[in-house]
Image (cartoon, rainbow, N blue to C red; front, top):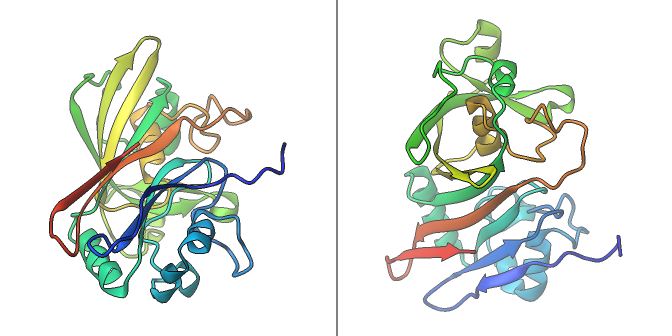
Amino acid sequence: MGNEQKEIKIISKISESKPFLVIYKPKGIASAPLTSEDNTSALSQAINLFPELKKVSGKKSIEYGLLHRLDTETDGLIVIAATQDCYDFLIEEQKNGRFIKFYKAICDYNPENSTILEGFPINSFNQDFDKELIISSYFRNYGPGLKQVRPVLMSSGKAALKKIGKPVLYTTKIVLHKSYESIVADCSIKAGYRHQVRCHLAWLGYPVQGDTLYNSKDLDNSFELKFSAYKVEFLNPITKLLEIYTI
């Protein structure tokens, strides 16, 4: 049972008018391979099904036309370009903020997390539900093995500011909803940093349930991360029409 391969699902196949692949990645597998021998990642599985994906040259040779990643513990939608023209077009769309990714999270209310991550710019934790909140920060890698990230503001200390590298401001749009005994966060981003949405939610005081990196209530447990990438929106490079995919 423990050795069963977790398999991707095809959401949208490659075609002449859609030179890209949209897949669903389950929790527990990486988005991209670490080595050329890795056949378990979402991208590796996609290439086994559609070998033409290997014709695209991306940011890293081993990643081909992969346009974005999800954390191993996160399930959801990934888009992979099937032609070089498509890849180049969608990378440019990302740079211009026109490739939008949406996430759904089940969260705890835990103001302690905002204190741990330091410097949250809103003083009140009693945020209005069903109202859009816009959270922006720079990021730096943090902790043993740099496994975590921390939000950084221009008002942060000099030591933190030195660690952000190129100063890119990352923004997460968040709408909090009450659902029975849970708090559901509906989030979207146009540009992403590693763990951005999870960290911004924790910074706000609503960390994701099961998040062993950013939820102080869940640091020592093995509950499943309640976080999914449920929707993507981008312009089709051939038709120039908006493509929207959801799960």
